[in-house]
Length: 435
Image 1 (cartoon, rainbow, N blue to C red):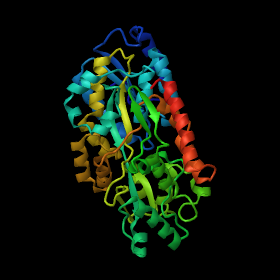
Image 2 (tube, rainbow, N blue to C red; image 1 turned 135 degrees about the horizontal axis):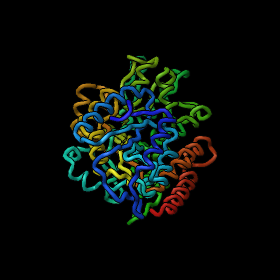
Image 3 (cartoon, helix red, strand yellow; image 1 turned 90 degrees about the vertical axis):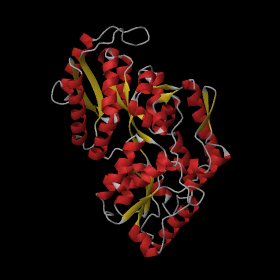
Image 4 (cartoon, rainbow, N blue to C red; image 1 turned 90 degrees about the horizontal axis):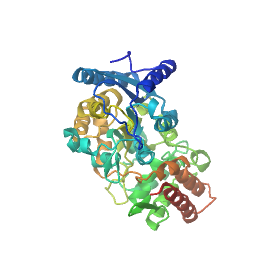
């Protein structure tokens, strides 16, 4: 292992980049390295977490084992800020000489990064990898574009319904078992306790809203051949949009306060005791435990339309991908397997609470930490993902869906008009992306 730590201070990072640039193998016209070196230094970019030390310790152990197994190979890990990742990674795609060999990336970025030519197709290696056979299908789909695999899922994030057990007990309520019951329960709580949001919702909380759309049979988009077409303005999707936006108002979560809220704000409202319910992730657990509601809440899967059903949740999370420009392809794939393998994912769950992407490792996680069971149940019920189109990045960055929700809750547009306008923007992004 080179340098202590997988580091690095910005100056050190620049020096390393310069050294790597002078040592890079030549590239072919399609961006691939002309050689596959079996020794030398591999550079890795991982995301910097709020509390990064536990992640560093797990990664250090995996890297040390890798270096022992691959004599002549050294690994340098740099932790990059999440909020500037897009610029850093895009620059690496455009300048292969300074690019790392392996990167961590958000799973909604897969299709865009593939279109940009930055990620290597590792379908053969993934198919032959023993661990991969136990990968959750939804997680596997997040590294797959047009049937080819461009990385390994590192962890998955999913959301469920947090609710205040003390408030529910006081008002004689039980956890809602259907979407209609969720909405009516939220409004009962708000009426009985005007100082509380029945359920904290956000006009900018796309991933909290999607389950309502999906539970009503709607889709974000449909695929015909190689192209996507928006479906947010279908009758089924509009039912979901109407259900979600019905939660904005003085009888639950006033639009003036809630229209601009995102996911973090809704979880904060719940954790601080300002809401009786919220849609939060497994990754929100630590924040809730640190809040005013500690010991006074429980979690259940977000209910679907039919009583007793579970609404499809968005399967978020991060992946690891080998850069197409890497001059150490074989070593980079092996390092990817080490960092995204079952052993390391189990340790990352223990250290960071990251939900494993392997069904067997996840079951063991639930045995050790019962709080993850509702989230695992949500995944098992059929979580969903965004369209595997490079156009999704533009749709997301342009805030197409938050704008749609906000237009409805503000009263500027009715559901049909807002959904039709959003669909036009989505179709333009899909068309510009070529699929």
